[in-house]
Length: 104
Image (cartoon, rainbow, N blue to C red; front, top):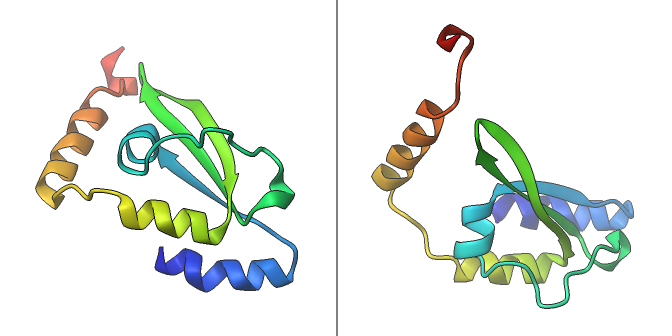
């Protein structure tokens, strides 16, 4: 959130947007999921949220929508953070599931 708060006002002046790629678990579970009427109009907000998931060793697109800086901050503040140990354990399990060239 601090990076969004620092960058978005400058990008607004330049009539530009910032895109943030996040995992589906973060956006859909912690940040409340897609809006009831998600906007895909890049002129309607400041932050383009690109939501993906890792499935079968591939990153797949789930959802995207445009939110204002204020809406983005509200969602991030409402998110329930997980502990570092839980996050690292989950990340390691996901990385183990990705096939490598050595698996062939």
